Image 1: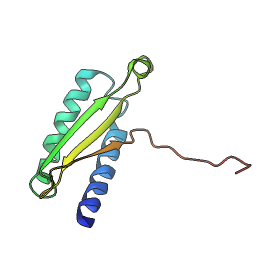
Image 2: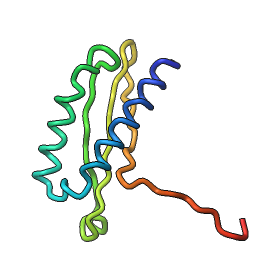
Image 3: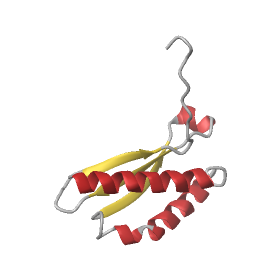
Image 4: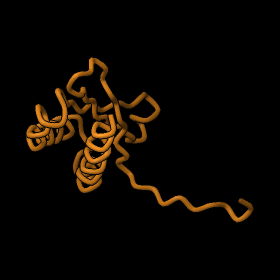
Length: 102
């Protein structure tokens, strides 16, 4: 289990860096689809080594679509497990600052 968590968080960091570097370039469904395929090909070496499966999906509701907000998720299954693990990829890095009264 611990090895799975380490691999999962490593993948999350890798994908967040990838998405952040391209966030201004993947603004259309076509470009997102192409970028998804590039990522799946680039990290295909992880499938069969760290994960049994890897997939990347995008979602956004009507409100988010009007404001060009898209969520990216990576879905993986680990060897010896039948459950799918889903992690959200934080495309926009945030720098949290506490309020003065906190």
